[in-house]
Length: 597
Figure 1 (spheres, rainbow, N blue to C red):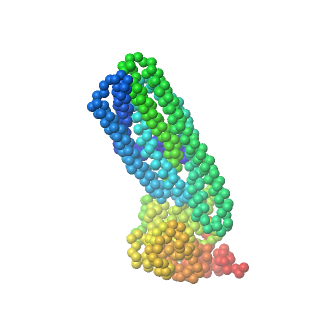
Figure 2: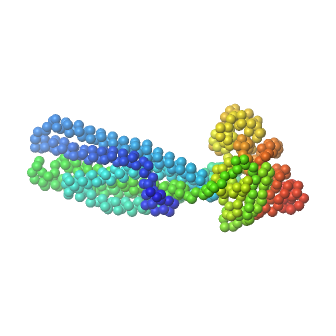
Figure 3: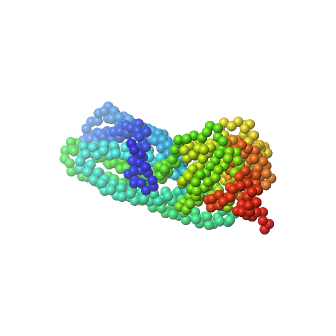
């Protein structure tokens, strides 16, 4: 079956079709639930009939002094108990099967699916989408979708089967009373459908605001220190208050509209219940023949029980219609991520087994928007060279690295590594060639040892400790009570910015890749530590092609080649000494850092 691709504007019928399509792998669970439901429904429909016979027997004994067959009466009473025990047991079994199978299947599949999908999406998607929005879809929307899918499926199956069974039983018993029960069903269902359609639109808006709220809270929390430093607590609280107010108002309308569905069903059913009472009593009062009459007290009780039972499937279907709006809205947002166009991977070539590290940009053009940033860029780097990339902010320095790592794809032109077009090799193979140390350090919630070892699987303790020594991190680790087993918390607040930088440098050292990318790798360390790190980095960069992005130009004076980038173009190339002698753009940039103000 062809998969229906979904986005946030897809019609509800397409979303429902996609959800049903995804239940195919667990069809056996649904089939088992349907069988158990049928058993439960048959027994529950048989119960009132047994009770009717018992009540009629008691009534006939009291009014007409007819004898009661005690053995038969006792057997029917025991059978009635067994019937209701079976019905209750089947309901519990169905719920257990659905909860353990369907919910786990949906929740696990979609959370893992979104996580895997994000690894295949362009970096531009993560750059443009607020992190809180992604978290909201992965956690909140998946939970909303998964937690109701099993209930909707179970209740729809059980509700439809029970409704059909009830109609058959009612009309086979007494057509007049049956009509009194079912006559209001079309009106209640039509009104409920209208409310469901309206609530769907409200829930769609509610989910979007929910993602906006997640994003704001995530940004506010990560920027907590900045908010405090600028005394912006009141302003942030006001902004959050506006979002929360909008969230509350939209949610109130959505849940209120959705909440009207079940009361409408209940009201119609209660009207039917009263009608059955009145019509049934009139029939009993006006019929002739006493015991031999068309309708006995037990029959009326059975009809009243059926009337009450009739509310069950109707309310289940009504609940499903309401819950379906949650599910459809959440599913749209989940599938919108899962159906995003993935990065195309054309693998026709492989890098040489023994990588040298020659890099060449040939007529490369790139832009983040309609305005070109890089046009017809050409330069070549020899294997083992230390290449510094300098220039003003926004000049295109980091963009060169993004293109080299294929975080973004070039609009035209070609980038070669050892003569191989990198667009024709897998991204995984390409990125395995590089170790990176970025200005924005990233550590995860784990031990220092685990964070360093992130750069190399199955690294030994000796290798980890050696990497820490090379990064001049060992002294700091030795001062900690738990040493390398010290746990770095979620926000990395128990280590300083400089120590985080050293950890990422140790990670890169341990990875020992053929090429290095250093983006302001020493920006967060003090001058003394910077000198030590520079010495270490010089050792690390031996026989490796290295790209160093630097604003602090004193750190790249020993570079083999300096590329001066401005407005996406390389305006100067040469060594530090040569560029100073030229007295051009680089010389002005370098001298500006040492002007005595």
